Image (cartoon, rainbow, N blue to C red; front, side):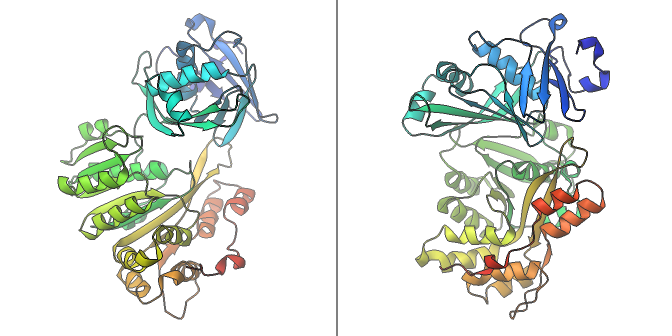
Length: 445
């Protein structure tokens, strides 16, 4: 495919001279053009084969992958709206687009090249030594575009077993230029109302890559643009994924946000939350709450009258409750269960499903609102029974404790998406499988 053969609408993502990898999806034959440190007159070609899951290109990688060539490669991937790039020592790169993984054909990238890329992205020569010292690196990386803003990535670098005994894996996730509006992530006004209480704990859960941080960013935008209720937000992330400078400049609200990054500005999430309490915020955004210290600090902040948003890894609302309680020791679980029942306001769990059109993904969500009646009822039930009672409630079964809830299950959400023609029947059945009776056992706490 030549550059002059490309329909102008297929280059709509290119906002400057660096065209990058522009995908033209058509069935199983996805074509692209790429520029790798070459003049526009020497646009190169790339072909993606959905059946074999491979990507081939006309440019040679026989030479060394220099930092400059890597920057052009990752920048081009960003223009193509690639979501993730995974690099391993002595392996071919993998590229993920709309949930599908492609293997870049050609030679494997050597351990030396991967270490050079690590130094380029980490910004220090000590990265490989730190990883060999059993440290996992989580950081952000940005590279300039020719005629536009810098492109940012969230990066994880980890040691893995390999042919040399100790290899390195680098995973780069592209971060959008601007945070999304609530409507862009499918949040309706009713959803926003439930997610914006005056105080308490709101949790977004799901697997890695399910869009939890994106949904939380959309809520951040909502608060910053709400001129009727200006707020001060403290945002603690690892690393910072979305920035809100444009939102604050363009909005008419008096709201403000201060963002801090773990490992750069703060030692950990728990310390960040405790520091936030001394900064008189209205809202505290906690990028991730999975350990005992961070969950405890988040509960304490919510109990002192703050609105706290955070994310965690869980596959359902009841599993989220179970995981939050399981981090505490037996001796402190009862006390923390009372704190959770008192402060919890809303849990949303989401997955990403492929669109019927094959050109993107949409969020499948289940959620539950914890109003005062639900919270008071939970306090009457032993905490070990909470996950089961919550699951019964979401399925429409009324338990002996009379727990009623405002909720939506994955199955109900899937039916809505199916009716709207956004997803296929196969996707609905795969991602919104019915509850399993064998999962109804209460945890042996």
